[in-house]
Length: 81
Image (cartoon, rainbow, N blue to C red; front, side, top):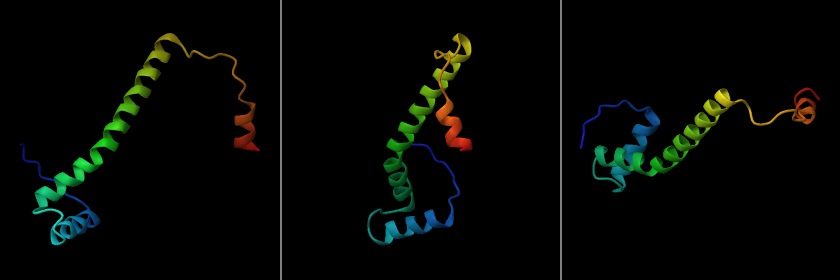
């Protein structure tokens, strides 16, 4: 285990208090760890997604964009139409 001091906004602090008062968590520490753990899967998914985007962008910058002469007229119509 490692100790980390954090500040949270008021809504999160209230949620932590409710978790403790309702018996969902025994302490602030447990409540924060639960919040982190339940949100972890979503964050890990987003990190993986961003890493894949970064890899593609780096590849395209080195090798060039793989698609040429794409018809973007529908995008222009949507934007300016």
